[in-house]
Every structure is written in C-alpha cells, then in structure tokens.
Image 1 (cartoon, rainbow, N blue to C red):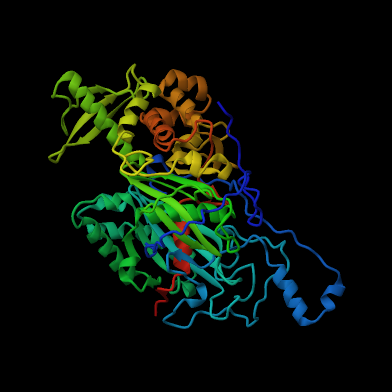
Image 2: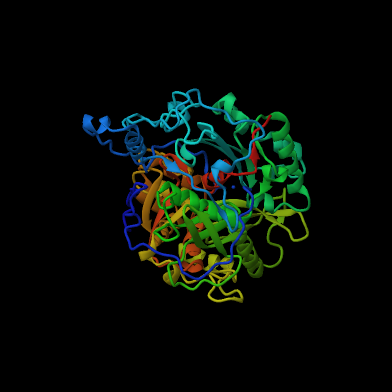
Length: 604
C-alpha cells in the first residue's frame, strides 16, 4: 500500500501547487453559459457527526517587512502607496464572477436602505502590523461586527463587514454555513465560517411542508447567535437543496421550498434575494459541481482575483448521498465538444472553460440501493421468484458479496408498483472486493449506448482524462463520502469514525486510487482481517462492525474512479474535508456569489 501523505497547500501568491506544469485553456471559443441564480458536498451525515479537527491547510501568513524611518518621511502620496503594498497577503479577495453574461461586482450591489458604515471615517486604513493574530472562528473573534484587517472599508459604499448564510439541504440532513467577509479591499475577503448541522434532511418531511421548514430553525438560531444584530438585515440567506429533494415526486419539493421561503420571510431578519424563488430552491447539478470546484481552488489559492483564464487548478469530484459530480479544466488543446457539460465560468480576470457533469442517482446511498437491487434480482434468478417478503415480515436471506464476510444487514427494497419488502443481505463467506466490483460494474452501466464519444459511464460524454486532465495538469481532489470512508482507515487519524478523523492534519490526505482497492479488500474480508489491520483501533473496529456496507462503499468508490472515470490506479489523489478550517464542498463557492450578488437587498 502506498503510504498516504499529508498535503501542504501553497500560499495564494504561489504557483507551486500542483507540483506540475501549469495548464492553460483551449483557445477555442465556448458558448457562454449563464449560471443559475445563487440557488447544496454534501450528503454525508449518514457517516456520523463531524469531529472538529485542526486545519490541515493553515492560512497563508504574509511576512512583515520593516523599512527605515526615512521611508516614512516621504510625502503622503508615497505613504499611501506603501500602506497599500503592505495589505496582509492572507486575505482572499472575491473577484466579480458569474457565468456567461453575468458579472457581479460588489460595488454595484443595490440596497433598499443605506449600507451600514464603520465607526471611523478613515478612507482606507489597513493595519500595518501583519503580526496581528487574526481570528479563525467566531469563538476567537474579539468583535464579530468589526475586522482585524482594517478599520475602514475600501469603498465608502460598502460595509466594513458582511455575513452570508448558506443552507445546504442535502438528502441525509441540512447544514448551515455562516461566512464572514470584510471589505478592506476592492472586493470582499473571506475570513472564516461557522458550521452547524441537523438531521434528517428536508426530503424526509415529504407531505409535511411546515415541519420541513421548522426543521431549519435550529440552524437559523445558530446564525442569529453568530451574526451581529446590526448586520443581520444586510446578511443574505439562501437555502439550496440538492439531489434528495430533486427526487421527490409531484409537488412535494415545491411545497417544502415554498414553506421554507415563507418562514425565512416571516420569522428571521436576514436579507433575501429580490427574486423570491431564489431564497429557497433546488440547485442545478451543474452549479453544485462548479461551486465545489470554485471553493477548493479558491481556498488553495489557485483561483484568485489576480488569476487569469490560464493556470493550474485541481479537478474536483464530489460524492454525496444521491448524486456525484466531476469538474475539471481541460488542458490546452484537449478536445471538448459543445453541450451542457461545457461550462464557461467568469472568475477573476478572465473566463475558464470547465467540463462538468452531475450524475443523479450515483451518490453513495443511491448506489447502495442499486447494488442491493441487482443482488436481489440475481438471487431471485437462483432461488425463484419468492425472494424476500412484504415489509414488516421476516425477510429471506440473500447472499451478497458486497457486504463484509460474516456480516448481514436488513435492507428495504422498493417495489415497482409501490410499497417495499425487506431482504436480509448476508455477507456470509461470499463477501469479496473482486466479486462486488463485478456487481458495481453492472450498476455503472459502462456499456450503455454512447451517443457522443468518448463516454465515462451511463452513456455520458466525457473527454478522456488521460488526455484532457493528465497528472501533469494538476491534482485531483475527492470530497464528501470519498473522504469519510477512506480517512478513518488511514493510520494517524484515530478517533474519526465515519466522520473522517480527528486530530492535527486529519482534514486531508493523499494516496493513490488503488489505495481504495487495498483498503476495500481488507474490509471485505471481514473481522479477521479487521483485527489484523485495525485491531488496536477500537473506534475503527466499532465503525466497521456497525456498517456492514463499508465494503460496498469502498468497492463502489474505486469502481467509480477506475471503471467509470478511467483514472489510472497509480494516479495520486487528495481526499479532503476542510482547508484552513473551512468545509470543502459547493457552499463557499455559492456564498461568494451570494455576497457579491446584485439582486440581494437589505431588509428594511
């Protein structure tokens, strides 16, 4: 097994990451794509509560330079230039950005009421002492209504501090991200986030729209605690639902979203988009993947206000509960056909052309259900049609190679005509990574009709990664369930359980694609293999014994990467949860767009 290695990100001003040749975009013109209005990484609550851990990517810190007193005897104009040059390098400015024809600049935000002004009247007074300890969380912030980066905003029309609230309504639970920004520079700079989650997800309240809306109160109460009351009316809030809500039949999703919008309007002081529907909406799968790409590359310093359309970037693959996304910037000269997969993103000083696709139904929870259906069908062919019984009765046992040996799990399978029946899936002595991989290959539908070649899986067009995004072009970052299922099994991440580990450096790791296979082979062999490898880890043993499908999960993830996307087994990938204490996923990318949106107005 290749020993996982820790990853150290570059500072935003560095181009040393990835440690390979930078890539440039193809000069071909791209059809401009309009990004959906700010319309959530994360469907991983099934894995268990997240454990707080130290940032693996500490924020970059600038080095203070001292000049002789004679430098300060120059005229006022020269002094202002020097002060501007000494702005702390760790601030991440948010450029105007959008898709297609939309470009959102902070200075064009329209407000119903005059924006709040900071207490002093200095024009652009940045702190010269970069040794100031800047807060990295609400708990370490001496004054959440102010900032330690400056004493006055860059533009008198902007507030000194802004907050943005993004609620991720995923398939297994809901989470709130409260982001703090300052306006010390020409565009907002992200400082830190406050995070809270709750279960179950909105889709669990099908037919009970008011209860669904009320389930978010615990999250919004956290926002009321964190956001200063004087800033709340100009703090935009949005609820974005992902694949779980998309899959509800009829008007159930629309009814839930309407109830959420009404509750935001009537019970909370936060700012809402001028377009009422945008306050709570189902996020387009394309935006979900692209926002996750923006979040990762922004936090790694690869996409900045100064960056143009060319330059290194990481590819982002996100595995949620109901869907999975892939987003990358093809290298110069790589063929990329026109179509919905082609996304033209305006960010910073230029446009980047991205390939993106969201596979609805291929999230981890949905993949589990698909595997179980295939196993059940195969069992019916072997034993006859009377496999399993109606829900509520004792289920018949079915051998399932995708469960670890010696484990079993009662699974509820939906019937074609409605209702469900319970089947007991049994790993018995058949649990096997290799056998499960053959079942996963059927689920991935690699041999589906490919109308536009080449295809990844399910008949979906994707340029060959070996050509469009080779190892020399940049790194690959795997998010959400990818991290949750691999990180706890890696030495040095004790105490993580299903949430992905704890302790210093527990938020990221680096390994090869085939590391997942090696871990999966050990997990699928059952308790004897667990004891040999993780016997000294009580937390890991408890997790494996409580989650018989961990074998299935690892097999599916490896199949998705190797069979589906056709990554080389020796390709090194990163598994990520946080960077510099900030959650990876689509939320920060969407929050950046939200805080700079021209359609958000302060509440009166």
